[in-house]
Length: 636
Ligand code: AMP
Image 1 (cartoon, protein in one colour):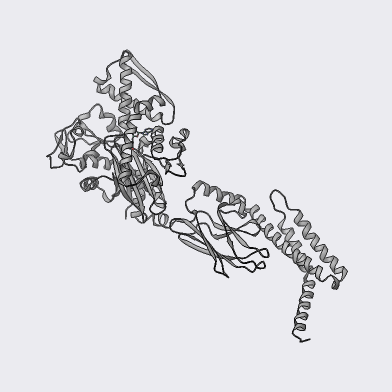
Image 2 (cartoon, rainbow, N blue to C red; image 1 turned 90 degrees about the horizontal axis):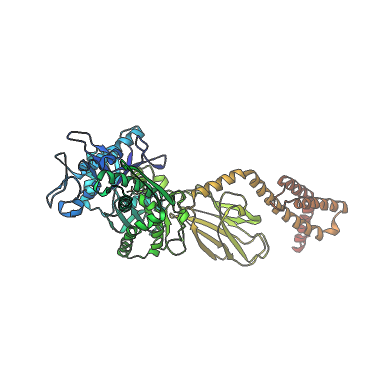
């Protein structure tokens, strides 16, 4: 079976993405461009349509032969289209009750046919990169698209020679790209999508691994283009005031200004001021202006604020408040603008937004105890296409193992005697998973046991991450007698349930810990790298601690025995025992205070020597005990 690509067929831009070796990525065209403007230029009767950047460049010069934003016409009847949307440079025809067509060079084009030209280009680019025919696709559509609009999209695919395996809602695809299908069951998220020409706010709920659209609201004529237009108006005014030409009467000049305006807007997402240069607007007039981010924000703030009402509406339709959401994710190129991020986080009550972190290079998650997290970790203009590719890979059966069968990124365990890590669920175990072990006490009459849950790959507890602690009380008993079963269970959502049970009484405690699976990739990598880098030291540390525990135990027992049997011991033998004990103590004193380790080999040897030398004493004690028992039973 051939592979399936994911396509974001957008109003302004379209993208094609695939998953290879588990990694989703957007395919670039021959010029290295990953975004293809959804613009189609029809050069003349019988001429080959020109698509993308090239078509975009001729749009201002040949408006009657160049179609943009055709997505607005997809699957719609003449009667459904408001008059202002008909105001394009080519005739839009169609019976009130019939589908619309666009008249170019005397031929009536259906919106599906124009969209198919965009899809054909994406198909060709994907084939060139992948080196194989591409015939199957997943295509995304806005959540509010009705059946007719979805069917028109499928038809466009067919005209382009693609079998549309599935139509996916854009916000759902974005959520997949953000990896939100791994959130807890019934998590709710808002997808704020501000593109070039449209705005949507969708509220989704995760149900058994799939997203359900709870509500969607937006404006099909609100987007980045409106900001550009506002900047153009301001610049045209300045040009006129400076004695330059009246650009509003000259479509060619307007196109030039629009281009520099958009570029300046984009630069101001990462810079605080930028120079706009328009040389030789007329033979004797050149124009330049320094546009600041502040000026841009005051020019465009009102446009962005228009999206707020849609956010509120969508929330109220879903019968939710912002605090019921776990995350707000951003989609669409215009959401890179720091002001958009700031306002959205304000409206949804997200974490205080740091201006310096507002650009994508420093994207991340912002948490606050109450409101949702503003998640900007994905490239906003690629998220929908990447999500479509992920959905395609799931359909092709390729992602099953990666998506559904998650694994534990790091080992989970508890702290045991001497501060060591005792692994219960090893790293890379497939979840859901359950495992347990039995523990006992190291001290006489211990009233309780502290269960310290750890995550990580290091031998010493203190080098791992602490996930939480709890205590289990039990009846006092000599050391080694209580038996405490500890069981870890990671459920399908990655939540760790740690259970500790006193085997004798059945008394138990279960504590739920934060997600054991959803940890930052970079942190996991760092932990694994550190465990490799410190493997030798860690092993020595573990051996030292184990030998030290053993030394403590033997010294205690021997001291007690020597004291009890002092009278019966040969003085020379007693000196031998004391020398062996002194050697063990000497080695223990060599422990480095800072690293809390010493030479485990030397300590093991000293332990062994003490064991050897105390053998006759142990035998003697055994004989004595036997004698006492036989006497007690009256047998001797
Ligand atoms: P989309 O429809 O998602 O491709 O979004 C396109 C819109 O995003 C256009 O209006 C672009 O000018 C705008 N855009 C793209 N990159 C940026 C950026 N870095 N800062 C601000 N706006 C941007």
